[in-house]
Length: 498
Ligand code: CS2
Image (cartoon, rainbow, N blue to C red):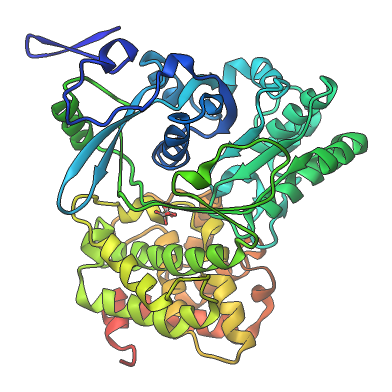
């Protein structure tokens, strides 16, 4: 146990040793963490995993100790070292507008940093007790072409991993190396569960793994096709990056230090396609749902939730709002996004069984307006090139096919182009975080001519795919971009028909 000091009082860290002494109001694991062994490898130990899949798994562990998580960080050792330091424990702050509750989660029972424990990690896949591998590595972590969902063989990480398959740095390279180790050990089936916001995320990851494995060794590719299952999933919970205030609040509520705290809304949804290669946790007994077709849930969530989230992010940022909570409280912007959802997005979405889309839309706005959970517009604005295809462009494709208008989605795209070009409405620089940021900077030299600037962005085939060569689509986005640059975001919204 380590100690930090506030003034002269030593504050202990969260750990197995301090768990029993936490105040009674703190929710604790309903099992003895020491009795748990790992049955799941999870790639990507970020806040979302800690507040979502790891929480469902925490509930499963109260009934079945086989499903502890071996949590893996791929890029930086921060999460793994923080968690290792506190025996894998961390606090979730459940924040609703009315109250905040602290809960300690203990499902992460092992931690590995791929950077310096790669060989050990690959060998972990050979353990017969591991039956599930899940991932939250963000959209860009799959090294794919967002417009087509196919592996980007020119991506430096993929080039690296194909040259040195035993030293993988990418998630796909790592999965294939792990599957190769399992095959070499005579291991059985493995269920690989992608939990990122990609359309048909299971099928997509299966295609990426198959393409990589085929390039590496066709026999391995065949073994994977026969032994690995890749269910589609829909994952939902709003989990903004934790702040210093969250860490201070956790300390007040628990009496211990926890740099790995996450803050999240109580609402959560996890729909998993019933497609498993072997044993798996009974997540369906603790609030998740197994379904034969996850596509309808996923389309609804990606287009309505993530689509409106990105609209609030780009337009809200340009209008001076730092958080979704503030942006969705602006009547002009909220009205605009509501119309976008109701008139343009919802008609392209089939309601999943038992869900009323109007209720769903209303509940999204209520979730965004949770003042206890400020979600930075700039956080959501990150990596737009990887997000926009599934959040907006597939909807637009459906609208075009139905010969139906999509004026608000065009304005949202204009806002993205303005944001990505790197200067806000007051001339201040925007910190644009995106794998294509360098390309954006080159395109942004045309900022003095918004129509030409828009054309430069619309030429990005990795984002726009077939739409790059659709003249009518280009004209609508070009006009919206010109309006945003000429009039600003607010005035552009004000001129939309009611
Ligand atoms: C957000 C998502 O950061 C983003 O791009 O839109 O992380 C969103 O909060 C989750 O998908 C909600 O389930």
